[in-house]
Length: 339
Picture (cartoon, rainbow, N blue to C red):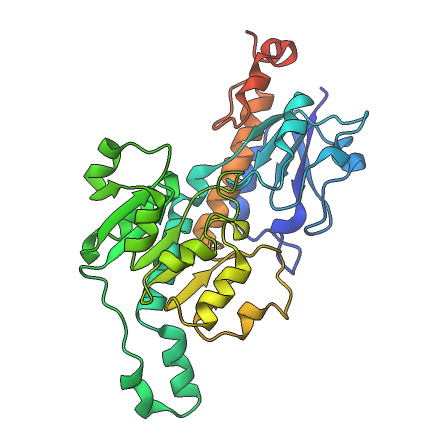
C-alpha cells in the first residue's frame, strides 16, 4: 500500500538532534498510511526539491514561499506547529491549492504565561535586582522600587486565544483591563473584567501594555513614535506577538530617553536580531530569542497539533483550524473529502 510522506521541519530538533518535545507525540504519526522524516537545515526556507518530496509538511519557523511551489510540488497540506502565518506566502499557497492549518491551542497557555512572566519581571525589576547583587550594590535596592499590580491597568492589544488566556491568568492580581481588538465583542470580554476601547485609549491608559495580536498589514508598525508619545512615562511595554508590530527605532528612543519605564520583548523586526542592535545596550529592556514559549508542555502541544492535522487529513478527515478555507472549495479538495 502506498504511503503518504510527511516532512517534519528540523528547526524543532535540539542540538543533540533529538526532538525538543516529548517524542511520545510522534506516536500520533503511527499510521499505516503515513511515513515521516525530518528535513531542512535549521531556519532556511523550504526548497522546491523538499516540496517535491513530501505530501505534507509539518512546519516550524522556516519560510514556505513561492520558491517552494515549483512544477513538481507535491505538498497538499502545511500543518503549522504554531499560530503565525507570516513565514508562509498564504496567497501563493492558496493559489496552489495547498491547505494550511495552525495550532492556536498549542500556544494559548505558553504565550499567555510568558507575557505574564514578562509583566512580573518588569514590575519587580528582576533583572535590575539580579545586577545589584552581582555587582555588589546591595545598598542600592531602595533606589529601584518595584511596581505593584493592584489597581494598575493592563492594556491588551489583541483579545484572541492568547490574549483572553492572559486576562484569565492575571485575574487574581486586581488590575483593571482595557482591550483593543477590531474583532472582539464587548459582551465577550465583560466576563473577563475587560472593557473594549479604541487603540489610542488603551495605549494612553495602560500601565502595562501587552501586544498579543497577529502581524498583518493593519498592525505592522502600529506602535510607533506617536503612540510611544501617548504612553505614560511609568508604563511598560510587553511584546509577545511579532517584532514588526513595533517600530524598533521608536522603541529604542522611548527607552533610551526614559519616555517609558521599560519593555520586554520575545520578538524583533529582524530575527535573529544582530548583536549590535542598539536595544541590546539598554538596561531597561528584557529580551528573549523568540523562545519564551519553549517549554516542555508548550512544545509537546505544538507538535501534537501539527501531527494530528496531518493524520486527520490523510485519513480524509477535516483537520482542526484550517487557515485558508477557500481551498476546501476546489474540486480536488472536495473530491478528497468526499464532498
